[in-house]
Each structure stands twice: as structure tokens, then as C-alpha cells.
Image (cartoon, rainbow, N blue to C red; front, side, top):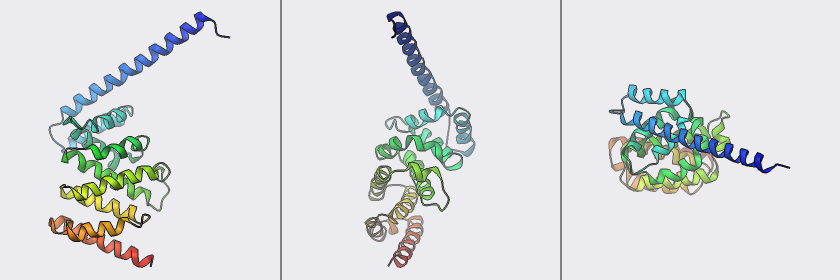
Length: 221
């Protein structure tokens, strides 16, 4: 049986530990925000410099995700640049513990320059999910995550977006459509009636995706 003095000691120890963790988290957040604010532009060396700081201290990654979805703050754009750099060039697996937050909050992004990197991460997740090689994405990416990404993807195709966002989105929707029968007809409709005429880049990617859809249909007919 725990005596009252022992209980009080353990309570205070837990309180101080939780308080210290909170202080450390705020310190990391402030430090990372400062580093992001110091980025002048998304040039390779700038993104890699801040990415290196996060890679050297993995605990900063959680704060990076949080800043990315601080959607009213323009520093979220720079956070998204670095998030994409880490996920697509270094460790895609680092986003896996944050898939719930990522998949649910990408729909809240407001700045074009933050949407593009997150669309690219979605594309990489889909490619990994359907890879022939075993990987952690196959284990961690759930139907709930996929459904949320698909819903946001169609929003990105319907609303005005940059060419790169369109391209990444068409790719990951095509891939998820290989297991969701309703996606390919909707995707095909949007490409042929809207997207393919928006620009040369959209036409090129759209035409490629249409051919992939046709090929998939023939294989499964």
C-alpha cells in the first residue's frame, strides 16, 4: 500500500516531468519556427539546411507537422516545404505516426505553396502503398486515412490549384482507384471535361492517367 508521503512524492515527480515535457515541446516549437522564418525561399540548400536540423533531432518532426497545419500562419508554407523534403527524399516512414493528423488536416490547407508539398507526400504514400516491395506504409496507412486523402484529392481537382497539385493528385487518385471502383470513372470525367484543357502540363499528365485507367480496365475486364 502506498503511503500518503510516497503518493505525494510520486504525484509531484509526475507533475514536474509533464511540465518539463511541455516546456521542452514549446522550446522545440519556438526553435523550429525561428529556423523556418529564417528561410528566404524554397531553394534546395535552404530546405536541406532546416531538414538536417529535424533529421538530427527527430523530436522536431512532430513540431514540423504541427506548424504545417497552423494554416492561418504563413510559416506553415515553409514547414510544408521541409516536411515534403524529409518525407520524399529521406524518411517517408516518419509521417506514419502522424497519418491521422496529416490525412484529416490536409483539407484545411489554404496556401497554394503548402498544398503542393502535401499533395506530393500523398503521391509518395500511394506509390509506397501499392509498391511490390514490403514497407511500413502498407501496414500503417488505413482505409480511414485513404478515404480522407481521396476526398481531399477530389477537392483539389475541382477547385483552382497549381499544375503540380493537379499532377500529384491525379497520380494518387489513379492508384487508390485500382482498389476503389468508383474513383476511376469520376477521375476520368474530371480529366476529360476540365483538367486536360487547363495547361500543357495538365494535358500531359491527364493523358497519361487516362491511358493508365484504360489499361487497368482492360486488365480487369
